Length: 108
Image (spheres, rainbow, N blue to C red):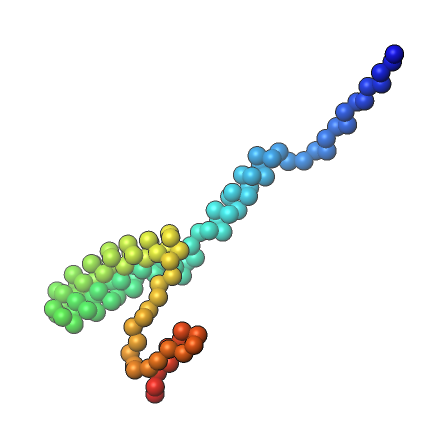
């Protein structure tokens, strides 16, 4: 009884699976980096801190407020940037109302 044997066909040449997974991981890591617009916590924190410190305690308060504001603004900006939390402002300078789409409108 003769049994016919089949020869295995060679696989087509393609990049290794590990290389595909590594390139996909690198691509996703590059896409998940925060944009440059998200890294403004240090500068804005220093500006607001120096303004408030100067308003309350004069030039010395402005210098101290700028340093503290830069530290706190940088920390908050870094945490929000890493976690992807949007910075939302709920403080309004006028009297108004929220519409059905949760947008604030001033009376004037």
